[in-house]
Image (cartoon, rainbow, N blue to C red; front, side, top):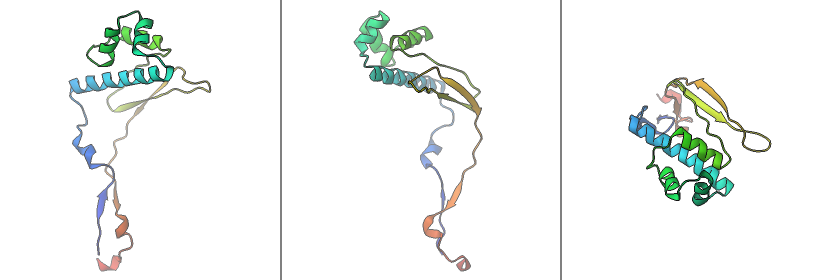
Length: 140
């Protein structure tokens, strides 16, 4: 009788620390916000040069903002959002909670509705491998 128990989910997730070092978390958040801004720029057809013109700054300032070498202030992020017709939405939530931001409207993007929910700790789930389901239980 062949019984193989497989843990569902990726084994790779076990290698990622649950909590990133502070510097890594800061870099991750910077990348996430830059990606969001770049996505909106692409959707709206706004180039880096056009963004610089709309924000009344030098193109080099936009380059440093978008490549992460500049630690942007909330002021800069709000101005960048306004320049591309978007708003900055931010919030804090307890560590054991997650934040879901949904933007929807029949006409397109609108103000975000922010929902903060407590994350339930999930125990590992196990399942019997598909090739073991048809095994004869009496053989054990």
